[in-house]
Image (spheres, rainbow, N blue to C red):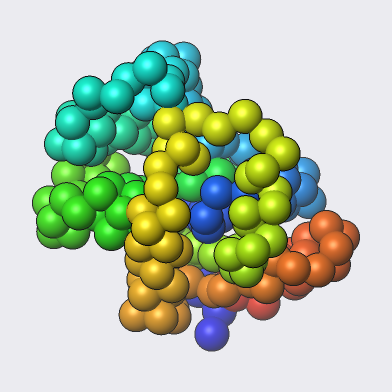
Length: 207
């Protein structure tokens, strides 16, 4: 099914577990579409300061609710500075993560009630959720191998059970909303995965 919206750009998010390749493929897709490339958290100057707090491995005492609210603040600034102006000017937006990461990480992962995370995110976004979400799926052993070769931030340092809940949360959201979500097999070469993503976006959005 092709999702059609006229008069404005299209908002696409790439989601997935840590080290799945979404950042690489967000860049490639944005280049292919001549779209605005952005990310959550940290897609604005203010957001970058918030991101530093969230990812700092010294912040062991940050509460789960404070984490939700900090991310919502980043998201509200991101909407005001990047997402809404771009879409209203007819530019497509490709985002490395979106509000769905809050549901996966703070909801499924941390255990904050999903309805609280969803309402908070929706308020921050003024209802502007991604039109299409591409979930890059990579087996757990491949993710672990990729993670072993890099320095880990505060989220990445969480235990295996947390990351398993996050992955399960993404899978559940994708299964429950096939109109807006598509699962992409991320195990192929970068070029093959990029080509699959590009074809999928064309098929679903006509761009």
